[in-house]
Amino acid sequence: MMKDQEIEKEEKVNKLQWFLFVIVIPLLFAIALTLVITTIAGVNVFDVAKKYGAKVPGVSQLVGETKTTSEQVLKKNIVEQKATIEEQKMKIKELEKEAENKQKQIDSLKQEIERLNAELSAKQEEEAQSSSNEAKQTVQDISKMYETMSPKNAAAIISEMSDGDAINILSSLSSDKAAAILEKMTPANAAKYTALLTKRAEVSTSE
Image (tube, rainbow, N blue to C red; front, top):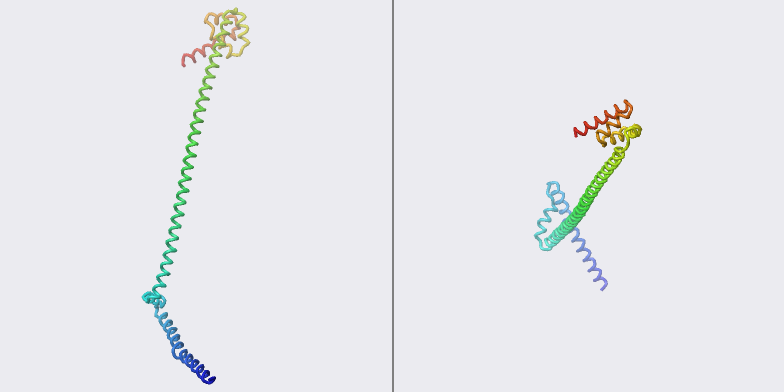
């Protein structure tokens, strides 16, 4: 019984050795030799194997699955990129809208500043006009006072004034009163004020 088992084991080992030495090793050697020869000849064995393997049901299915997976990854990347682009477009639109609102605020502030400047200019002009009217009224009141004053006293007071104030008063008086006051002044003052009055008259005429 034991001998029979040992004989069977030896037969199996012998068959395996025969299979390796007769079929497997020569086949591997032939494949290696073929790869070397085709590589030297410039033929891409893997492309050829892929081409013909695609026609084999099992291999073609494997290749098809790989191709499908690559397409799916590519489509997924395209979808993600489109989503990113759309998101960036939305952000750009939001920024443009925000910039537009800021510009509207700036324009509104500019209009408010222009309105306030216009009001300030009008107020300043009104105040200047009011001051001018008050000054005129003051000169007229003073002139009335000098109209009633004696020429001698008026000449003494006016001679002590600044040239501008003196000319303002003399020019507001009647010609007869101004002449009477000038007669009571020293020749130097009378000549000076007469020249200033003449100059003011010329300026008023040219305006």
